[in-house]
Image (cartoon, rainbow, N blue to C red; front, side, top):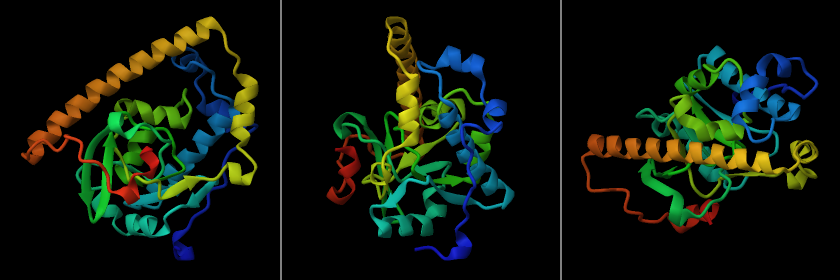
Length: 251
């Protein structure tokens, strides 16, 4: 699909690597996480950081980053997104996600636009899922500005305002997660063994979610206001719905 000279593989980290200890902030994790991230989850985050560091080291303007359990669901859209990456990542957009875990579209679709013939949506609540995404150079710099991590990477992007990130998605999941096709996720196995329910942890999780949702709504409202002022157009936030071929991820 892409010429070999454009494909670069990262030798990722595993839970036993010392990088996990150097990168992980246990104190902040205990404060800001419902469940303590596992070593495997920290290693996965560290591996994403390798990709971001490579983007900067090679002086690229942007890159498509893929996890090892990705599959192409719509190769034509992926190819087009890569070809039009400069336009998609213009105007301050830092990340274009090509995979999102599903949510109810009617409640969470925020802004829908079309760039270079491709639909983009800014969800009112940023969704988890970093199986495949386009990232700008500035986006990589912002993500790497955090020297020590304390959440899993999928959770951290939901706190986009902490990094100053502008995150959009191409709906329809042109890239999909294929962990189950490969026999299941090793991270899920480790997660299940490490997470046990109790009342206080559940209460903490509720409070953390309320905190995140309050900031998410506030940041989205501010972004919406700024967007309207910049574009000077009739309200584009009255939901128009997505084209059928791009609606799969939101259903």
